[in-house]
Figure 1: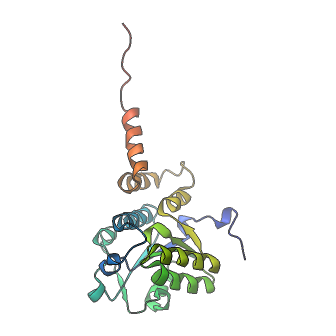
Figure 2: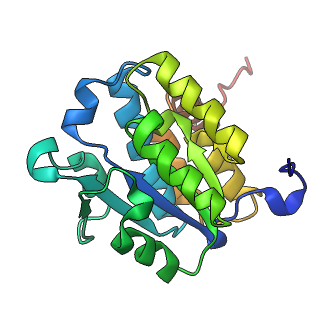
Figure 3: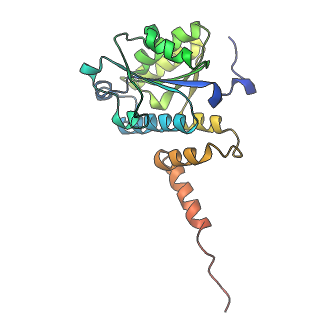
Length: 217
């Protein structure tokens, strides 16, 4: 096994491309590994983070006329972007998706989708075999059961994939708080989707902007 370690193994926004797979109503109805509301929140957080860092994001669905359009709060982030609708269950067998990824010239392939054990595992494993550096965002993905999700993660790790959550990815892309060009967008994502981290940030800003009471008598 080749261990993933060292500075070069960390993800960089300029080398990353995201493929979002099948975040559609049909799949959401049988999502049992995660709270559906949290899965939607994390997916939207992921795409907003990608936009904040200028990372290309390929949006894909499978037979949308039956399974439904991908979540509108995802397409809202990229309103002018075409969603690539497939018949292939394995996204990496769809030439239009692969061509779109290759056109970016990037090799750090980041995948999230529903379901983990099917629509994420298959393209991840195939892309790994073709030499791609593959990362799966586990909390913007989900399976038909906790077991299905976890077994799929184990299977992809065994194949050489890297596992992360959306906030870990955001932090790795940011890497240095001195990189001020991406901070405003990142802060907005954390405020909107980061749960307690977002609330804590807002509280910190409140305290910093609260005048110190004059205790002099």
